[in-house]
Length: 317
Ligand code: NAD
Image (cartoon, rainbow, N blue to C red; front, side, top):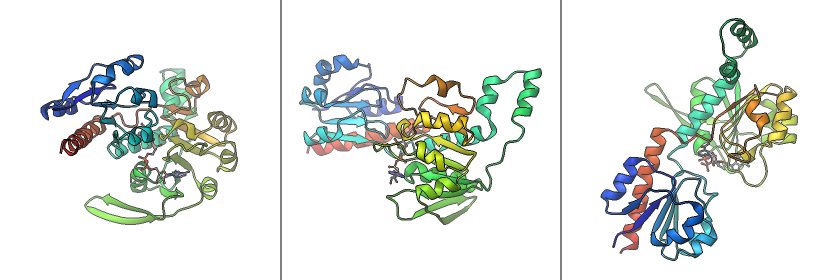
């Protein structure tokens, strides 16, 4: 007997078709969260992104569930250990979107450096054009500037490759990494480099740019104390988790001129974003779209199909 699978937060069409061609019965019509306890009982597996919550209470009423799959990285919406303790496989696709997120971080880095967030909001011809030209006429290049990475995993190391190739000096703080080694492709050559590792405090006093690439583990990586020791005029980029930055402390640091500008893809209380962040001329925003590229979505779908099929084969042995 094959498995019946519910895809509740959408999936690339190529992935849906691949599951069907492997013989799985697939439903892609979204079932509202409140109806899941009743409806999910018919399924052997559920595929979600971040919207659908698969909590303990839901798991308890679905004894036939064989797997929970998350297209993407963070599994904050799933009670992972509870499910695994009940023998339900929980899978995700941690590496599929790293390049896309790193490219978005680089986009924020370049945008904030040249004030594009403000230029785009204010843009107009006539007097406003001249005023904007004057306002943003004394920006800097990123070449030879120091970029501190807080977190040197999949995304941090991808960004390090791009930033190094663009002439930035990358330094790394990651308490769980011993050496920050990198392989960079420069033209036809592949170069091995080792990036300097620093403490968070040392890094913050040296860096022109700070980019966050660590999970949220209960306390913000950048709060009042960290902004207090930062190099004046630093740029802050966050594509990790909103909770990694104390947003009130950031607003204060921006208004006090400690932080020149910030690029934010993630927020403390999504989707309820503080108006002061949305309106701020020194903040470049995006709506948690780090992994939202066609390439990442295709990789996510391909990886999930492969893992689900392997799981099915292993469980039917
Ligand atoms: P990863 O697990 O590969 O790397 C995270 C790194 O952070 C690890 O090397 C770990 O040692 C390090 N780390 C842990 N605690 C730290 C701390 N206190 N200080 C410094 N470093 C610390 O994860 P990843 O795939 O690179 O993802 C990084 C972040 O990006 C995660 O928060 C993830 O949820 C987020 N993310 C965001 C998007 C998006 O759409 N914006 C998409 C995917 C992932």
